[in-house]
Length: 281
Image (cartoon, rainbow, N blue to C red; front, side, top):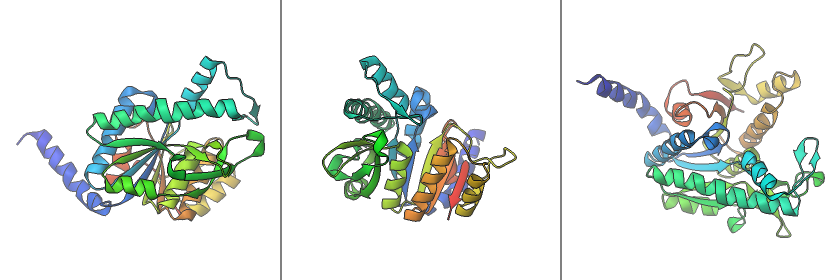
């Protein structure tokens, strides 16, 4: 027998218990970093998500788009201010944010999934009032913090076999458009869906301990202690905060994993040791 076939049969045999475990499960994936910037990375991610749907998982893709937004703002000559290193989202900026996220970025992901044989549709948190926000910090203008998430539209898409691709935008109580941090939006959606997994794709290998080694399993108490002693710092702080918020909201587990690794999502779900740092309460 061809050795490739033997290897494939062995892989499928090992994956079978995990396929059964996740049948009917909801998995929310925050897409960002390398996979969004590379055509090859995007195609690989799209294949993974399509396969998830084909084996009975309900994936939801929530994406960012910061570099694309910055590029378009520069191209259009829209100048904005910064407070503590964070961009102030005024009325002119949020128009560009919505154009880029719901248009350019979202449709690219939808097309990539459709090209791999999946059925994807793009929407934003504004559609059907899915995400209602209040200002996260008045100094930052139209940057929103989700206060309500209605998952009805996403569940209708699940029933129709469609993969939702969600741009992190929301609506305010006075019909404002709010820009939401992509991780924050993904965490809020995962909590509202009581998702089995929230996968946060990053450009690092996971959460590292004091010795620099990636930790494969952490608890909420571990996260609190490592943040307090400075082991978790910089850009990893908001990601772990999102993880804890999602867990407290009803998500079973959150995984911070390296989106640069080929098939990272599949390796996390369908292999014994996973591919990143899994966090549970």
